[in-house]
Every structure is written in structure tokens, then in C-alpha cells.
Amino acid sequence: MPARKPLNIGLVGYGFMSRAHSNAFLQAPRFFETEYQPALKAVCARNAERVKSFAQNWGYESVETDWRALVNRADIDLIDIASPNDTHAEIGIAAAQAGKMVLCEKPLGRNATESASMVSAVESERVANMVWYNYRRVPAVMLLKLLLDEGRFGRIFHYRAKFLQDWTISQELPQGGEGLWRLDADVAGSGVTGDLLAHCIDTALWLNGPLREVTAMTETFIKERKHNLTGRVEPVRIDDASAALGRFHNSALATFEATRYARGHKALYTLEINGGHASAMWDLHDLHRIQFFDHRDEGRLRGWRSIHVTDGDHPYMKRWWVPGLQIGYEHTFIHQFADFLTALSEGKEAAPTFRNALATDHVTDAILKSAKTGRWEPVSSVP
Ligand code: SOE
Image 1 (spheres, rainbow, N blue to C red):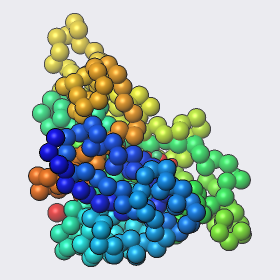
Image 2: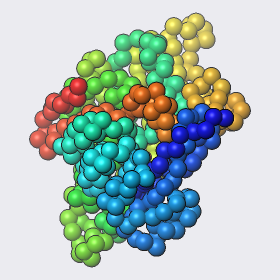
Image 3: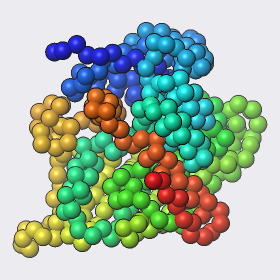
């Protein structure tokens, strides 16, 4: 094997997403052919003890407790931002200005204004960039994309997606601080609209093109929670549930729903597309399958097919075990990082770029606006 070029990574954050990303940095070059060898140079977080233990566990060579020091290190090529949403813009812009490639956890910014400033930074500095909307890289979802691009569905009439969870139902759950910053509007930007619906929208825009307009409702079921940082009971300013209707530019109708109040559902991301010739459904709890119906099949045999997306001719699968054996959630990050490395070698962009993620933020902003105005709101387009 020819010597690989080193790609020195500096990671910001040590939570759940930092583990998913670090695993991808380690595994992508083991399972995919790549010109680059990622080197886990440094991880940065404020708590010195905990960041040291994270570094030891994942094999990072060094630690920093100030992200500015990390971003300015000459031995780092790429900054990966896996810290809470309110840190994305400042770190991302500084990293781009320091000439680093920038990867960022979703959503890109807390709103489209923040995201737009991040897009300007990476584009004016001409640095490679990508946002971790990982569900595009589920092999079954990628297969759906390939089938759509082949025109097998005909004209698309409907796109519907849901992301349902139930982990915030208890009134006793506090807001804010580590692990619970998703409930703090100042840190997260929004509630389920930016956290969960954003996944549905990223996939929808990628599969079915841009949205023209949306109308939406949101609800905050639990109005006050103790704040972990102040110790006081404070108003909850995030949306607990969000539901939207939309129209795509291709005239298809969209329905989207996200909630953390669907008792029994832990991470039920489902999507369905109905076209003139064919329909397909996908479900994160059964992530290696798509259900596919083709009206052009011979009448006597026409019906829903359940395709087990584990064969060598399915997207990404020939890199893994043998046909029929399944992979899971963590592989979506490995695939996304492997695609990033391939794009880097080929001098191409790896999607979703910051610009692609800005398009998602314009949709979530329009949804949050519509929930306030009670009107249909146009979605700003992103060239
Ligand atoms: C929230 O619970 C969360 O972890 C999201 O932040 C992720 O983006 C989603 O993939 C799973 O749920």
C-alpha cells in the first residue's frame, strides 16, 4: 500500500457526537481506500481531567482546554466541531480563517444568519467543509437516492418524514448544562426543529430538491424547568414538538413532524416518498431495509418489496462483512468521513457542505417563523 498523506485532526468536544466522529476517523481508513491517514492530533474541551481521559480512550496525542489554541496550532489540518450549537459559528469561522478544513456537527448554526456567516468564512478562505447530517449515509437511504436519480419513481407527489423521541416528557428533567443543553434555547437555538426536524429536512432537500414555502405549528408542553446552570426554575424557550406542511419547487407536498413527546419512540426517524410509478419507505429502527413498491411490476406479483440492503452491490456494503450481515448507526459517520476523504483527493466538495446545511437552516427558520405568524412563509433559496 502506498504511504498515505497525513491528515491531522483537532476535535472540539467530548460528548456523544465526539465519540461517533472519533470512531469514524479511526475506522474510515481501515475499511475504505483513502489517500489520507487521519491522525488524531488533539482534542479540546474545558474540563482538563475529562478531556485527558477522552484523549486516552480514543488515542488523541494531546489535549487543549482553549479552542483558540487548538485552532491556531500549526500541526492541525482539520478542525471538527462537536461541541454544543452556540459554539459552532465562532469556532468554525476562526478555524476557516486559520486556514483549516472544518467539519461541523448539525445543525450548522443556531439559525440561518449564523450559518450564513460560516458559509462566507469557509468559502472566502476556500477550505474544505462538511456538516455531519449522517443519515444520508445509511446504505438504504443512499439506495433510495440512487433509485430516485434513476427516475424510477416518476413525478413525486408526496414526501413525508417524522423524527420521534420521548426523552423529555418528565417535568423533573432540568434544562441546560452538559447533556441537557438541547433544552436551553440560548445554546441550542431551537428545540426539536433544529435538532430532529433538521435531519428530516436535510434528507428531504437532498432527495427531492428545494422547498418553496412552509406552514407550521410548534408547542412547548412543559413551560418551566429548573436550569442546571442557575439553579432556578426558568421558562423553557425551546419547541418540544414541531409539525410542518410544505411545498417543494417540483410541486410535491411535504409533511414533517418532530417531537420529544411521543411516548415509546426513542429515535424513530421515518420517511416515505410517493411517486407516479413507485413509492418507498425507510425507518431508522430497521435501518438496513427499504420498502419499495413499483406499480410497473406485473400485476399478479405487484406488491411491497422489503429490500435488505446488505449485499455487495448496495451502497457502501462491499466494504463491510459478507452479504446479509448488517451494519448500524456508527457506520453512517464512517461512510460520511470516507466520502469526505475521497472528495478531498479528487478536489471535490463533500456534501452536505456548509452551503447545503444553510439551505436546511433557511427551512427551519421559516418553520419557526410560521409557527409564530400562523401564516405560510417563503423559504429563502440558497444558490
Ligand atoms: C437528540 O437526542 C439526538 O441525539 C440528535 O441530536 C441527533 O442528531 C439525532 O441523530 C439523535 O438524537
